[in-house]
Length: 324
Image (cartoon, rainbow, N blue to C red; front, side):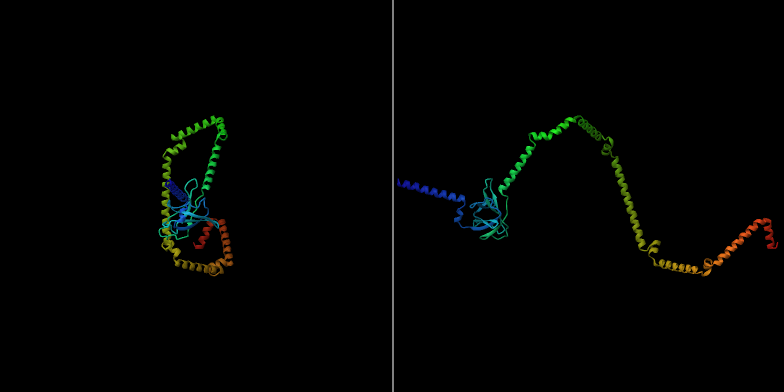
């Protein structure tokens, strides 16, 4: 009897110890009694992270959350990791959730292969993930928006929107029918190639004319290019002093000859203006002008006398002059 009671008591104690170990394991407190490495990370928000929550790398558990505390304007999360956890100094930590019930955990990335291993109490870089409550709030707002849209198109409101349109269609059914018929006729004529639009669409005459015009414009452009090229060659020759125009523009001999001629002409005109020489005296001597005027007057009188004497008298005078 005694042995049976002791046996039952022993089994009960073993079950209690096993249950306690299972509870502690579930709560994540077993790591408190094992060796490991401590790392820390600072987040903007803990997002309902709790002490004892898992720390994972690529989905594999490598430790537990040991402490959560406020550190100035951040949340300090202390983690206890297994000694074999391959956490690098450039690994990044982020708080994630595993389901809609809010089971959060800390996920740590691998980091680069060349980075050294993180030592005891090394701070890790962190990235922030949207809070589950914020996501649910956005989903709730989106659902409310969809509900409002459905309310707009429901029952009476839909009738209020479509009612005026329906009444307009009923009141103008005959004009709308005629308009639709006219549109149908016009489209049929266009499809048959009738009218200006139909011919523009289906006949090749416009295309051919446009192509010819473009070809003519291209030829004109080519001719213009040739003319410009020829003019450029002529200008190059002129600039080089070739040809008559080129020599006139570039040869200084003509310039000096023209300058000399203008100088001589200026000297002659100066002398004429001063009354030197025959032309100068003719231009400036008033006596010559008076003599010329007197001679013209005498000639005019002689001509009048000859006109009065008659032809025979003129011939007699001429005979007497020549001794006939």
